[in-house]
Length: 522
Image (cartoon, rainbow, N blue to C red; front, side, top):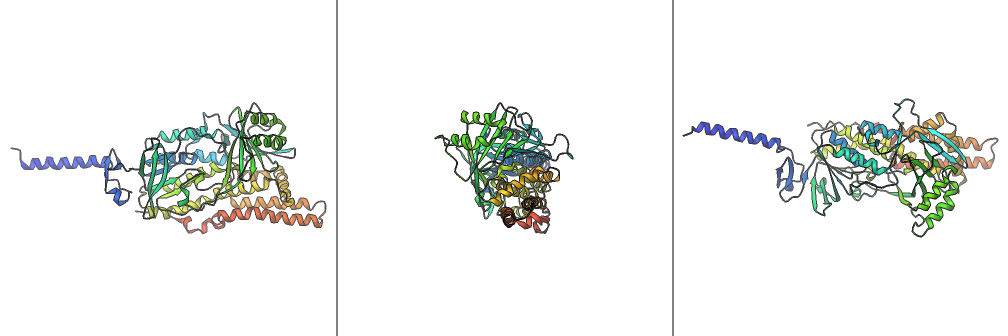
């Protein structure tokens, strides 16, 4: 007969061994699920699942795998977070915007370890812009002298870039990408606990995490509960792809100050040039009945640089004409425990300056740096209060690019107002001066110098330059009146944009209490 002490020892050893296995499987993980759900969870392969198949547990859920979502998934996954990404369509996107990454955005890409995502997709280096107006042109180079020779802008097919980032995110063992449509955020007593979504096979599932980040793009159906969206649609882009032609200034974006609004050209591969024709308002001529083709040939084509005109007309005749609305939306978040907005779901600006990806990548760097000290994300209310600093810390880059995009679009568009047209001409002539007159504005545009005060100074320097031109060779009452209206027009353009961005956060972020939020200590 075996001694009872031996049996007791064996029994105790079995319990201890089982406890170790349980811990290794994740059994001691603190659940972030609502109490009624957590009570029914069981451990299965290290994941929390409800007995009724109601969901899985992750550290972070990301809704959307576009530029912001895919880059964020890789960034948080690389920091050791267990990330679930739910994307409506994981096939390669086919878009006509999000194709030009400014040098400031490329620097952020390097900071996130994603710079190789612009390789092997036939991306093109971009070294600046060329402006065209009334038959004249001027070249504006990025001020890259202080940077490594590899630093420049990059242009590419948006879908190829996104697929590279998705592949890189999915290569991490703790990042899971799934195709599905998120129907709603799961809320419990004011805190977001996860998402409810429909899989590719039409199965309704739930997933839970202490932090859900919504990056589902400009058409987001989830943003309304997390912010106060005031979406404006000032214009639409008509997109074409030009083939078998060369840009007047190689490896530069081209902006034609046309009537009624700008036309953009930039390379997206070694053989293709993207053309975006801006059409003011929310309605564009119909593509199906031929009105668009007529508009492009009769109104737009005569204003296209002669080197590109034949290729432009050929692109029209091939018939692959795409349109999309240009949206702008200031960031107006409702801080919500358990959830955060990112990317175009959170903040949009006119795409004229190609700043959207730079803002998104900069935001990811800010968020990554805030989350890195935190090992536990489960205290949603404390985390929410801490992450309020995100909205202030992002402002220098975001507000500079947002304000410049809105202001430049209005300045570059034709107007029946003589003062506005004087401002337009003054802007072209000011930038044509070169030196500090072009380097300053271009460094703002490129995301290399995100300083709101510098932006305002250059903007009003253009206005004052325009007034000075009007006063020569001698001031007349009519010229003085136009000058007064010019400065009034300039103020009417920039001040409403600054107000929407938030004067205090934009110019005096250090006075905002959230600026000094320290990581919660447990």
